[in-house]
Image (tube, rainbow, N blue to C red; front, top):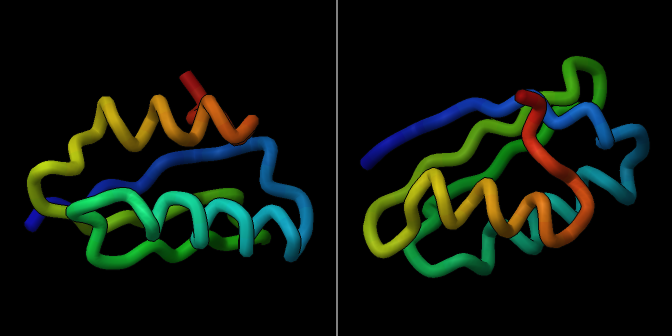
Length: 68
């Protein structure tokens, strides 16, 4: 299993947390998603077929892009 942490500056409320956790959590292979409002960080644990590229693309698609 791989665990990554991303900075997602667009997270600014509890609704954002719920959306990110729900959407990313539905991606096949994702084991856990934990978003933090204070730090604006999202920690994701996943196995194949999920990948960093797929996760980043999904976050961008739902308007929560990962900081460069």
